[in-house]
Image (cartoon, rainbow, N blue to C red; front, top):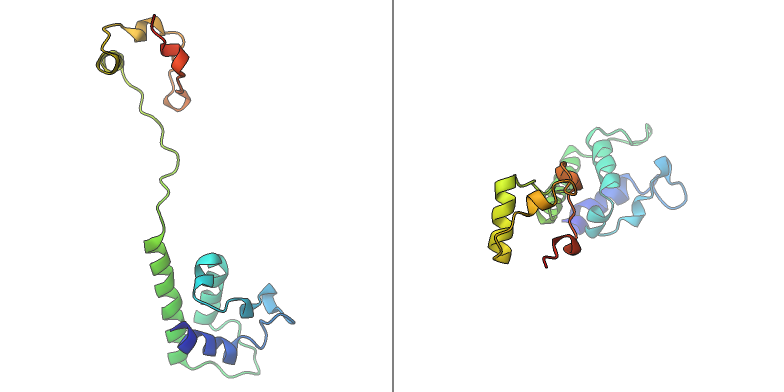
Length: 144
């Protein structure tokens, strides 16, 4: 699709102004020679899509591009955005560890270590109250 519709559309309507010499709008579209470039520089492609859709970058002395060609190019760009989004791995961001209550903490230590101690009472002043600051080291749990 890129080689049959998008590249010829750019050659006919865009490369005249958006080339290495002129770089109108600080954009050289000749750098984007294959479909993979869409995933590599999505911000630029989103800007290009907006301009093509609203025919804002057409010089006044040039005729408007054929609407069927515009639709084919914009549909291809949007479908590529969707394809790239489906393939992208989601980033859940920072996940804060949930803080255990006293009983859960004691039961967890008992279940993991097989020792019936109450570490929550031993470490009462050293375990932080905020979940986002919990980071225990192994040496704190060294049991003699």
